[in-house]
Amino acid sequence: MQKKDVIIDAINHRQPEYVPWNIELTKQFAEIMGARGCDDPEMYFENHMLRRKYKNNKKIDNGLESDLFGVTWEDAKDGGDVGNIVEFPLLKGDAKNYKFPEVDEAFARQVVQQLLDDTEGRFRMFSITMGYFERLWSFFSMEEALVNMITEEEMTLEILSKVEEHHHKLLDIVLEYDEIEAIYFGDDWGQQKGLIMGPDLWRKIIKPGVKRLFEHVKSKNKYIVLHSCGDLRDIMGDLVEIGVDVYNTVQPEIYDLDYLKKEYGNDLTFYGGISTQQFMPFATPEEVKAKTREIIGKLSKGGGYILSPTHAVTPDIPVENIEAMIEVAKEYM
Image (cartoon, rainbow, N blue to C red; front, side, top):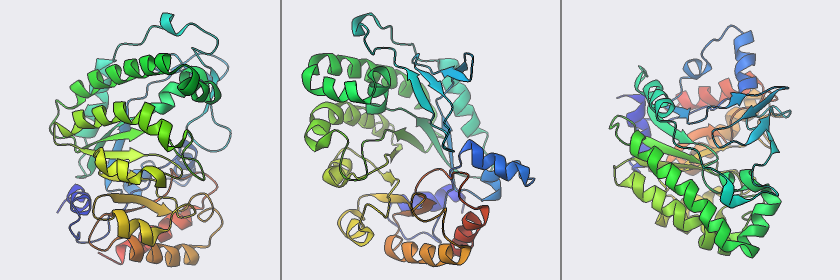
């Protein structure tokens, strides 16, 4: 059995041979691993999933980068990989004059090839970052995007329709490849309590376009992995309705995991569960082992669970804590 088969069993709510795991890494954490002599942390941690991003930022100067949609970023100073936007292309600008980019087909196929080159039998995910709502606010700033959703609804929907059109063209390319197991959508909708825009606006403005994109993926029988930080309790049933197969990040400081498994465990596979926010940076390896056993006990029965930290591992998390988590996972093999 290959690693991807264990993931697929979990997604299909068949009890897999063991609990699969996956460790996403920030660039800074990977550098720590490199300093220890580890050139390939994904291999070292024996990951079961392989994600490659449709992200190709171009260096400008002074540490700034421009992404594929013309948004200007600076490097993150907090150990993360996302960075901070320093120039929003439509803030105080004329949205009608903004020229949406064409899909970079050559780069998209290059990303796919990275997945096809995998020799470890991992579950392969083509990743669309800044997927929909995030792409909207990257144009305007979070504050203005939220205001526009109420005061400039027509313009907001027009912008989102262009984002959606772009992503459909991208999916047309990626979904040519039968070997890819899943499309991974990164689109943060939640905050520590509730949705950023609230459930009503999410259903009115965000849900329809996302649903159409998910239907596109499902038309080719691919799995959908959704990453959204924060509290999505208000729309958990909607996630099932629109076809989400795997939900990440599943933050235990937000959710009652027993309730989550009971109510949605037959429909969703939970990917995460070990807190990088309030636990992993501060715990001892023995505490990590105990917590890992606890979370596996709550979420893995009948499949439907992929063991993972709740977010890409930041440099404040000891390497020994990640090793301890995987050591426990292997106890179930």
